[in-house]
Length: 433
Image (tube, rainbow, N blue to C red):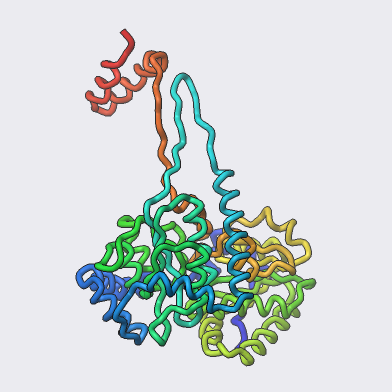
């Protein structure tokens, strides 16, 4: 199963023509919107009963109780291997340190100008909903990535929804991460139905103010549909993506395994190799074929790479970055010795990993920045999950007598121009006497 070839060597068109020539992602919203709308409607009208019915339908599990008992969450810490607990603790502390730094760096000074003082007030949301995928794999790391910045933001209540495993339970590694992260409630519910429950509430699940976390296309579409009822980050955090830029100096087996890393997350993902060396393209493709054949997740890999795997040939590094910017991938790996010199040209990517020793896997677990990243080309305008996604920004304005005297007439002028006499009069009444 070879990667499909795209050859842009010698391409003479402008940026617009290049954008048109680069394959676009499938419109996942169109494919899944009706199914998701039906699920959301069921949950809104049926509550917990609908959640149980949908869980039986999509996960093959009949549940009596949706909420995971608190003692089971805590006990999971004692059941997981000590090395896993250590890894969770280290990852938690590193993510915490990063997001605390991010939060402090974002603090803004008061603005004073002409007698008007504007203060920047940051207030956390009251209740945050986190989603961690399940089914094909377990993601304790995602639990940490979602909950830690929420805690740093000052959120009072954090809840987590995770699809049940075949036995009707959430695995110990995920629950252990919930315990480490200090999550208040965990619910054994997944898919679009979990997003609907957190947005609108059911008998068991109180509604939240913000929903975060990655998922499949149905989860992503559900978040899009409930956006406006609750806060949803602007990124389409859907199936996983990677663009690997490789040159003649790139270890080809490293490039190949990094393509497979993202493909093993499951269907609808994307894995692109971009190189200006035909020999590198051939070698990487051969390594990918071998890795896929030997993998226990071969079926998932073949499905993902068959639809979203490409080997792209370009004239050189500049064109490679230009195409990467158009693709706007979730993960961009520049696995060349001169990676740092290319960074300034990158304009659209969820996260960038520089140099052969910097695989995206490091960012997935404990580099510090969040691994909940924009996909489906939303990196053109969206960013990684941040502390700010759990906060509201309020500006508080104070006006002095002098400012009212000097600036008030201008307000009156503007208000009267817009045909709003009460706006004008509210200022006139306050002019210093």
